[in-house]
Amino acid sequence: MPTQIHSTWGELRTSFEQVLAHTRHSLCIFDADLEQLGLEQAARFEQLRQLLASDPAATLRIALKTTEHLHRQHPRLIQLLQTHGHAVHVQQIPDSLQHLRDTLVIGDEEHTLVRFDQDHPRAKLVIADKKESSPYLQRFEDIWQEGGTPFTPTPLGL
Image 1 (cartoon, rainbow, N blue to C red):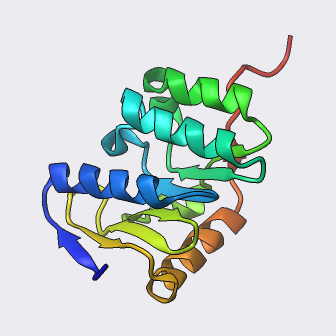
Image 2 (image 1 turned 45 degrees about the vertical axis):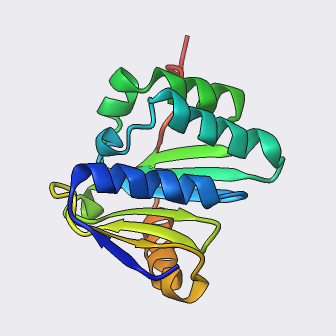
Image 3 (image 1 turned 120 degrees about the vertical axis):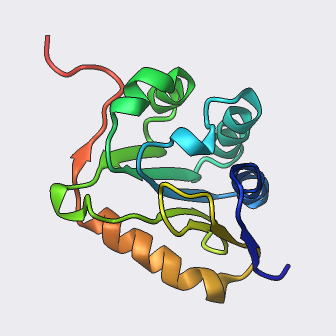
C-alpha cells in the first residue's frame, strides 16, 4: 500500500483504525494526551483488547506529554492497564521533551501514522513498509528511552 497523506480529523481517525487493524504484536503511541485518537470508543478499545489477548507477548507502549486526560477520559484504557499490566506501559515524557509537536502510532514496526503537528490533522499513513516506518520507530524509541514518569492506574500509597 503506498504512503497516504491525510488532512482531516476524520481521515486521521480512519488511518488510526487502519494501523490498529493491521497490528498483531506491538503498538507504540507517542501523543500529547490521546484525545484525538478516540481510544475510548468501543470498537477501538476492543481492537486494543484483542491485540493484547491474542498474543501473550503483545505489547502496548504509550508515551504522553500529559496523563491528566488519561485519568479523566479513558476509563477503558485504565481498565486495560489493570488487566494487562504486564503488557501495557504508559509514561509521561520528561520536561525536556515537552516541546515536541508531532505524534506517532507504530504497529508491528511496519504500520505507521505520523501526525506532523499535534494541533492539526495533517498526517502520513504507512502500511506494511518496515523500511519507511523505521525512522519513526527509532524516533519513538529515542523518546521512550528518555524516560519520564510511569503512569499507574491506581494511586500509590495507603
